[in-house]
Length: 65
Length: 233
Image 1: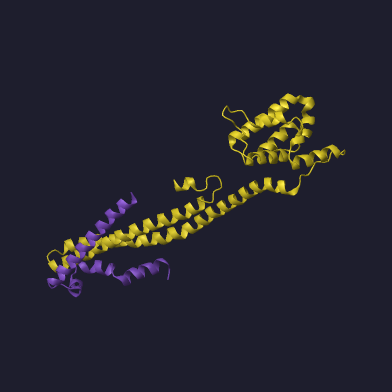
Image 2 (image 1 turned 90 degrees about the horizontal axis):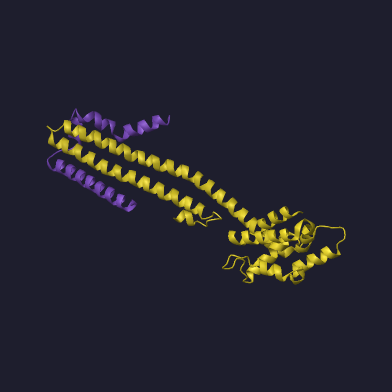
């Protein structure tokens, strides 16, 4: 049972990751870049929220550091 | 010592026998007491010796291959009881006891020699030790499970955060569809983080379950009564 669940999750994860890589590669091939993405006003708040430095700050503030 | 004390104590010492054998042996000795009556009770007690000595004798007979419950369910101990009206045919320990009781005029409680005593008291002591080990193993497994569970909970939380970020990135990508490259980058990042998050959550859950179950299986293997059989099932 556990092995079946593991296989399903592994397949879903691989599909998601491969799809993500394909999307990113397609975007780069079409001339897109992260610098341009940061110019997007809609994407900027989310990118700032998900930036590693922001996540680290949230974790550190949670533990009172 | 009276009949009730004798039978209770004898039952406690019959740890080497199966429950059926114990029941039959105790029933057999109960019959003996019934047959002896109230008048003959003290004489019979004197004849039999202490419950420990009786248990030693029964244990030796069992080790010699004697069965105590035959096909018809009648205790084989009866045969022995019929054969031995007196305990003259009893083994060394019994004879020693008899000689003590016969010679002893001040009704002092006889003390059997050390080796048979050790043989009988060894089993309950071992059982107690293994029970203590089992209890400590369960406590240890529980204490170890807590940090393991917390560690993998933190890992699963990280995976959960990745899945949440997938949702944010895909929603933002849908808002930015007029910039195809940005949308594709957002979708790509979102899908990748989602896949990674799912993998991390599953890894955390699976590792936590397998580690904690292994700990408890190890602890269950020390349980004296089942020897880990229930845990394996």
